[in-house]
Length: 230
Image (cartoon, rainbow, N blue to C red; front, side, top):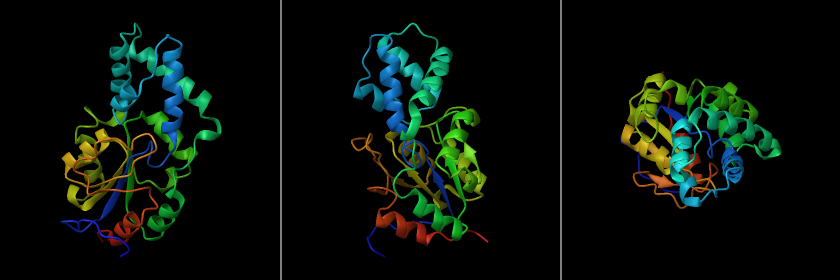
């Protein structure tokens, strides 16, 4: 082992990935979308608002934006506008995060069960995961359309453990936001924070450690410990 980390209390059997900022560079595009959406309304997209929105279900995040600036928009209308703006701005910016290709080469070869837990809508998640080349490798994709509450509530990660057929403590979760980590920790998963460039100052209390990227030797070593249930 190249570096130390807290040993799992139970054998790890599966992985659940957050999507935005962990698998896809979509947080870069979100910054531009939020900035443009609020520019049209004569408002700034402050860092404090952006961090508050990160990791929340889409409709909750957009309602947070509406409430923050006292906008007159209906959340459904803002969601439609934001989705159109996202794909208009995405262009060549939407790429896999560092280490994704190498990590997936290993977990696919080792037949490690893997799924995605995202706060985005189903249609958005399917399109993003396909764009960065990992959709075909996922056993399932849990989205905001599948849950009642969403992150930071543990519901999405409890659902992921159930889909994997493992106990929450047997599941490795890789998350980039404070709200996502709160959800995974509350579910009882072995949670590792992998901050994106937009979330390095988030509070990752409860995470086992904070990785640099998916290329962090500790993440690589931890994945090497995963032994799928036969």
